[in-house]
Length: 453
Ligand code: AMP
Ligand code: ZN
Figure 1 (spheres, protein in one colour):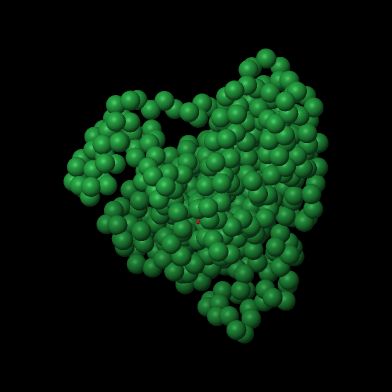
Figure 2 (tube, helix red, strand yellow):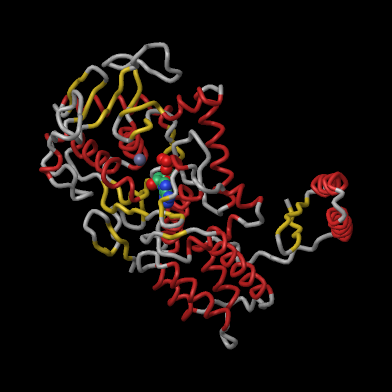
């Protein structure tokens, strides 16, 4: 029995699929205008974990993740510049180049984090027709109105607008303190934005309402419905999506189809640093590549995230990451010593299943793993760990102790000597020589480390 916390009802519920044995799942994806920081990546570790848990429960999952490559403005409230266009100006590249470049880097990070590829990556710019059709449908049903800068959704037309976030109706009316321009209600949002100076934007399309581009929310409704149908099982994102993005997705989807959109809405909490949300606007803390350069592995970060509940904030520090890395290395080293007796241990597997099926309780699942590893009498360790790792995705059976060739060890020693004599030129040359042979030296206060690249 799999239980999942549903933001819609604020309860843990027994998961029941719409179609027996199958799950349709949509995860709100990245806006590809900049590096994804480790906070963003937490959202995809969560989505991947959920998919793996569903698969552990023998469901056939169809997973869709969108790629926002147009329409996301610097303010979620339909104001400011388009993030992609802004980045293109900043970097002197085309909007397409920006989106492709950051998407490629994102995919590399996912691979390092053992995050599986979804069945569909859907890009907003490749689904303009679907978005226009959905807006047309809303227009026909009388949910839209026009202002001088776009076509807007009239949220006052829906009795249950804001049900996901439990927004209070009174707060939604055009308040005196908030300037809402030509909008009728504070919460109304753009479905289509007109190009303010036609021909100036790199990405703009013809539509029944004029030249322009889609608003941010409409892409997720149009693309999820295209690939998963008008009514599907699970939709996820970070908690920041609850009050605006997901609230608006529900409003426009249910207004267009006249029926329920999604059964289970699931949200992961933030990664924080010194108690504050890690966000792109504040610089974003680290990327995976930056962590790697400092000697931490991507999977150490995954382990760190899994050691907390997805529904609780988790505070990042390099010190805790180091502990996570040590734990993971220790796990792998111990596991290496086990013989594969080709069995599985059903009692440990049951305990593990109970943990993950209780709303993805990974801290408890890791405890079960550690208990199994320390249990001297337990049989079927390797087989059981393999199954557990199909959910955890930590490459637990991978050999950690990589043999470093003697030649590399010698070069590293020579380099260390050069460094001690402050012969930086020689030290750098040796580092390059080692790099050419596909090894990397990482220096730290306690000495140096050699790792494969
Ligand atoms: P973006 O690329 O900015 O659209 O964000 C991608 C995803 O990352 C969204 O689902 C956000 O909710 C999520 N996100 C952003 N910041 C954090 C954070 N500090 N911790 C966890 N998730 C985050
Ligand atoms: Zn979305």
